Image (cartoon, rainbow, N blue to C red; front, side, top):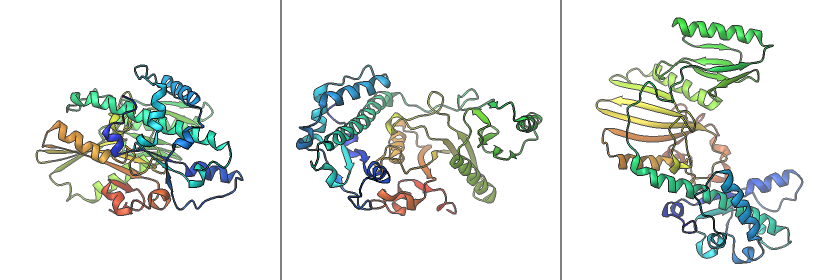
Length: 360
């Protein structure tokens, strides 16, 4: 039942931080009424629900459900009140200034309805992914990576403004290098073709230019830096890799790559293999900004635990699964998490900071 939150959602509740919304209002001239450095956790109570337009909330959720094509999801109107009821609200955490939950003027009701809709959308999305994962979990199994795997890119398609004759000529030079086997890295302005011998195909592209559109999409800045850092570490530590093999593969997005419903439909950017003796260490790596994640209980953060549960279900002692997030958001900017997590605790959660942790 939709209004009976699975145990996993109770252990790792949906989180909504309303402070950025209020800070955005303040930037438009709304008076400051709280200390944004202190995060207060609140709940919707019966006094809030009494004034809400439940029908409007239900119609908004129906629209959301239809957009996602969740036609097999039964969204009963009465389950909205049951989910938001104070007796059944352990499935979410709401970070909001306490005065925002006080009934000082009637337009507050519209904000409470907006909060309820955002919370319920997050919950329904998480609930749907949980049910899919629950069904799919019995079908997980290991497969050898084959040459026809969709993650292998055999060609790039580039759309270039016809006025960019110099770029076209340079890209022809790059194509000739690749076809002749002489490619070992290339760049022209903000266009980069990256060579890393341990990546399972060459090249990886990083094009930061409005004049060139690339398909499949090129690496973003954080992904590019991760590949460069890994390349530097590999070249600088030959003794570590003696008797070990390292391989990297960029993971495509949904429809082609490897994704995990149980982690919020998470498609980590890279698969990294370290082979030693008879063991394979398979690590999913995702360079990303974490400022807008839900917090310590975000499914992408908790994937470092989820992947170990999957490892246990698959039951092959010679395959070790891990997951890491490489944050290109500096630690100092993860402001509202710092009360709960120190930098060492981030590390324990397999979150490394791309700048600060580069030396490690």
